[in-house]
Figure (cartoon, rainbow over the protein chains, first blue to last red):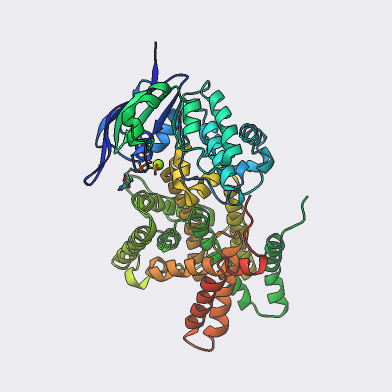
Length: 249
Length: 329
Ligand SMILES: Nc1ncnc2c1ncn2[C@@H]1O[C@H](COP(=O)(O)OP(=O)(O)OP(=O)(O)O)[C@@H](O)[C@H]1O
Ligand SMILES: [Mg+2]
């Protein structure tokens, strides 16, 4: 029945005495959105970094598409199909939105060692990048440099960069943060469709988004998964309500 | 076509001025100006090499004298063997000297490329101040090696006596050699522009601005930077070979940190990351040396003041001052 594309097994990471990831095991199945929620400092971004290879784990394993990712670096994991977005937008500031996406497309094609052709005249590259920009409603802002994009537009660009990699799984670290209500609404319906292309591990503080999108929710507190289940189960879980939703049960 | 930017106009002006210069020098009977201009072209090319690493790739190499010197010694060693009719080595196979510039350039480019590869391999794992220090240390290592290597003159250096040959050009005539150097300078500038606009250039500029993003899209920044560092070293190495031919002399000073500093200073003066920055910087550098060097031994002090001014008030160097901020797209 379920068929995990991403399997995280007993992952651990300590920063000195702080256990940022404390024996975390979660899976991401084909076709689903698995939301990861938890208070600030719970270790959500740390977990994403461990999955993507930016941070080494003390122990445990990450299995992606049947392959153990141990020993692979960030670039290799991205090539295997892990498409992530950053909690704080991380784009090439001097490049236009278009050239940012063109970089991701060329990376996806494995063609960064071409030295002579001017990328601006590379019709295939430009066309593909424009196509992706229009998916996130940025095609009108294609020529604007990333530094001049609004905060929300940069969040959209983050997603475009992940889309360009045609990933087998998305890891989205608070994509709604700072989007504004209108932007969030559009993003929710976008992600709703996106899960058909590839499953999404979604970190999000916006509870409306989480409850309307998630197939499953896991709750992380102090680096531990304290609860995991369907939306209704998590809503009803008294421990979650106390620890995270800020209610006394 | 869109209207030319101020920077393009400035670049065209500099190009034309460099082409016209020897004719003017001849007309006013100042052949020495051609020698000065040849120095400008050669140091400019060395700067163009550094600028690819420093400006486009953000790699603050304080060891580019290593490549300059290796290129210089490649020229010096090949030429001195050719003059003495002694082979460089006989076993396991025979390698003879040559006075053909084309071969000398090729050897200089390959040798400095290999050195850049090795230095890059070890230093590009680090960044920031450590990268500066490691590149400096490697270049100094080569400097001390050259000093203590008696076979090729050690501390005293190595003389070439006659200028090497290039196809049918009379390289001993100032015009001939000048235009060879100028051609290579513009070749280097053209190559830099081409690389910057290519897919590789996009990756390199990304490596400078945001390595995290570059790896997240699946490109290893290290590989990109190493490739750029090698190309950069090759260009500076070629300049070193020309410099040896200009002076008809090679010495360990070509490898010293002063030389690294000189190349870096002219890039900063002209404008880091600007296509014609190294040329503009070399012009200013040589002018200062020529004008104030004749008046006072302390001309470098005045150059230092100008450098300070540029660093504090004109981050885009002279090109930035005249043409405004760099355009990005
Ligand atoms: N490189 C690091 N060195 C030391 N401590 C770190 C490091 N990175 C994260 N931490 C700590 O680990 C804990 C988890 O941080 P993390 O960023 O993963 O939290 P988060 O769940 O993403 O929080 P938020 O919702 O605020 O984004 C925090 O206490 C943080 O201070
Ligand atoms: Mg976080």
